[in-house]
Image (tube, rainbow, N blue to C red; front, side):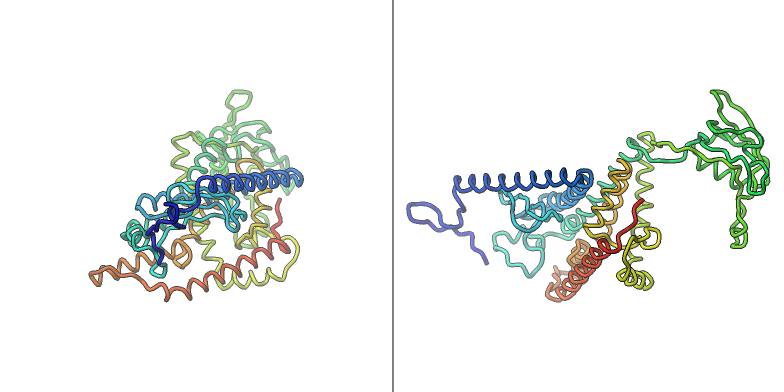
Length: 435
């Protein structure tokens, strides 16, 4: 145990527990600032020389999200009066740090995340008796639950804010109601339905059978369900509405029919593209809905990683070289190398692609981090919940012996290390083919 008792030193000064004097602290801070400045300048120079400025900015955004994850832990720890001793960006050697009160803030050399250290995270850690009341383990269930879940909650908050920005301000690419192309002939040589009645490129579809349409997806759905039936198509041409009676034909190929694909109608038009933005109040609601859908898909994808078929396919990929097909090989984890490539591709595609990538990362990390295994935050949630249930049954505070959990934690760490190394190997020798 560490004692906080201070013993007078010769000359009236306090002993080692007092810490360095002001001049020593100032000198350390100056050296730290110089190291940090040199590192930042070097990274900036490398990004310019190798022309990877845009991907670097995306990676910086990802690191910022990770630090917001840690900030979630930090503020909930302070809220519960837990003692936070460290709040660092990165891992490895310290580039710069400064102490404010009882917490040391700083930057380390390896930008692979960050961490917040709270004392007394389990019953194995020795803590000064004077600080015991401020340990994580001393707090009640709800305080520990808030702290453990704060990082993942922060990821979902970030994802929601980014989704609102994407839908309400930046917009997403979608099919417009303006017709870009009209097919002239069908496969049998006859005129295609739209061309035959006089619909031409540049016409804007505004209504079908008198029902207004706001997007091409809704129009296409109505056309697909009207095979063989007359459909009144109203278009806007030179600012004036024009009506056409069109009979959609069966759009299936011979192979589709043989495969049992249900009949659907087409009239032979192709929509142009437009940027679709949601009005702000609607963007709030649609963002929540989209987040729910992505969360469900991400959860299915995460647990799909560990199915028998996917493990077998993953092993097969390990023997492959050359580009991987995102459609068939997409359900796998990315290493920093793969993430950097995809970040660069997204940066070239534009702001919407970058936001979409960041949203997906936040949601996946938020879910992955809540796996109920140590050392994930979900492991702390599981332990705290177990202790609360057993404590209620026994009528007294119960604390799990973490010695029993160490083998599980070590197994998870080894599994993560192997998974990370295999992901790195695949991203180097069998990388995803990017468009």
